[in-house]
Structure formats: C-alpha cells, structure tokens
Image 1 (cartoon, rainbow, N blue to C red):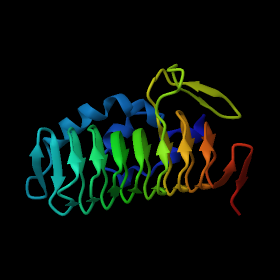
Image 2 (tube, rainbow, N blue to C red; image 1 turned 135 degrees about the vertical axis):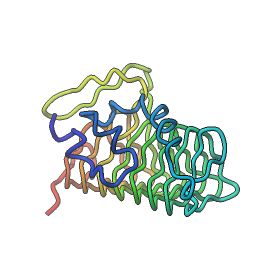
Image 3 (cartoon, rainbow, N blue to C red; image 1 turned 180 degrees about the vertical axis):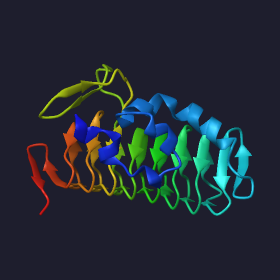
Amino acid sequence: MEAMEIKNLYNLEETIAAPLLADAKYPWEVLGKIKDFIIELGNTLPEERFEKRGENIWVAKSAKVAPTACLNGPLIIDEEAEVRHCAFVRGSAIVGKGAVVGNSTELKNVILFNKVQVPHYNYVGDSVLGYKAHMGAGSITSNVKSDKTLVVVKSKEENIETGLKKFGAMLGDNVEVGCNSVLNPGTVVGRCSNIYPLSRVRGFIPANSIFKSQEDIVEKH
C-alpha cells in the first residue's frame, strides 16, 4: 500500500539513517539491518564531532547525556540530542539530531529521526519514529503479539505480511501520540496524525487524521 511506503511517511533529509531507509520500500524492512548499519556508519563518523564511549557507541560532542543514563551499543547519538536521567538504551538505536530521550525511557532496535521526543516513561522497540514525532508520557510501542505469531500490518485496503515476530510502530513525521497510549504490533501512523490519550492503536492510521478510537478516526480540517 503506497501510503505506508517510506517516501510517504518520512523526510529522509532528517535522519542520519537515510542511506539505510533509501534502499527499502516499507520502513519495517530495515528493522533487521539497524545493528549492522550503526556499526558501519559509526566507524566513519568524524572524530572532531563524535566521540566513542564504548564498544560501538558513538556520541556527538554536542549531545547531552545524563551520567545516570545506561548506554549499550550499537548506538549513535547525533548532535544536540539529549538523553536524560535513567534512560535505558538496550542497543541498536539511532537517536537523531535534537531528539529527546527522557527519564526512564527504554529504547531497543529503533531509529529516531531528528527532533523526535520520547521524553517520559516510554518504551520504544523495533520501531521507526519520523521527524518531530512525539510520544506523550507513558505511551509505548508493543512489539510482540501475545500469541507470538508473525506481525501483519492491516488496513482497510489490504493486509501486508511482514514476516516479523518483533515489530513495534512506524510513526510518520510530526505524529503526536497522547499520554498512556499503546501502539500495538504492526501499527503504522501517517504523517501529521494525532492519537488521543489512553488509546489502543492497531493497523494503519492515514496521514492527517485524528485517532479517537479504532472505530472513530476522522480527517483533520
């Protein structure tokens, strides 16, 4: 489905991971490649702008990282990003320019575009968050189905078999997710859409939409 293709979700000028995404059609196709991409790219980053802080961990010198944050590689934290108190990066993560990873937030196998905010008690796993996407306090990506079967992305037009057991959420540019929402496995949210607080989201949400409930999704005007 064309609306879920990378070209219609993301501005690739707003991520250091552009070369990885440019070679794929759908964003979830890159989930299994993030780890190797970080290692390859990290070894080419300029030493005058990035410092290596451990095995396969590169942190921009202009980034702010709290001493209580736990960083595991492979990991790239881009310029002007902020990683706050007790953030837990499990590895295979790209934190974009000016992005915010907040207190007690956990990241695992993710790409955060520039200016993404996951600032309070978020879990983001096996996901790609577009430019200026924001997840409200307590909102999370659920990345494994309860029956452990492979994830299928569902929309009104078609269902797409991903072949993946772990798949969180693909959030387009400027998506706003309300507090304490759960993005179920296989969630894809189009650009500039808003998710109401306390929502349970599944499947494809079109761009420029307001998600009030699974049965009540309206177009922005």
